[in-house]
Image (cartoon, rainbow, N blue to C red; front, side, top):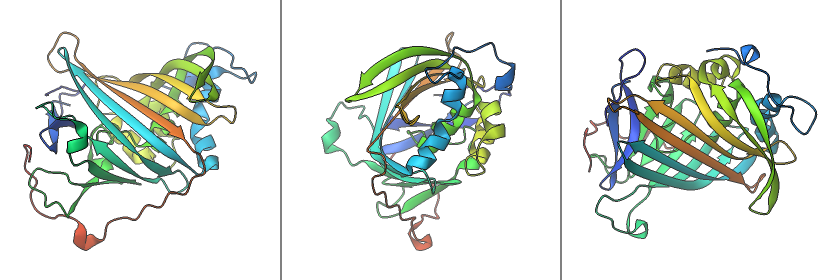
Length: 284
């Protein structure tokens, strides 16, 4: 899939093909204070303020189990990528097992998942395919990606997804719901990548600054679900590209969090285990 950003530059996004992770070329703010008035949330402050505070609430929660889903929609074609794992918000590290769809229609259970380690400034991938030995990791500098790794790895870093909501504006409170046996508050609105980058934590800011240049628009529609402690239980964010089609292309990223405070241990790969060779542009 080839898409153009606002500047006519290039961005990378993860797409599934074969057993590897093919990184396709995508022919790649404004302040929330200037937004239209927001709804009032149940706590008596603006709904936007409730949403902007979720990253801080997650750091207080320390860690969580994670489920991710990423769906690319372009020209009537849908590609879905799913992941599961855990994340430590105090260190900004996590580990996911990401399952790619198979073009031949074979069941997911028969395919080797990609292991991804998320860390401040870096994404590590194992079973990457594209000519990379099975026992080696690929390391990617996330600040070098024009989307800041919001979509490239096939899963949005949970802390980045939460930090992105710091730019929330025009937020409406949709009421209470039950999700997985937990009462949650549903908010809907848009967030601005540039505005979020300017107020993000130092750990996440470089990636969001990169992402500000990688999409057709900085405006990201979202649905967010918060529990009574203000912790993010689920967020659905839609990123939009232009790829020559009349309606362009969109990537819908969903992150679900549960089991807060669980023990999450992430060990970064040793330098000797990181692949230093050339990565094929196609699939394995």
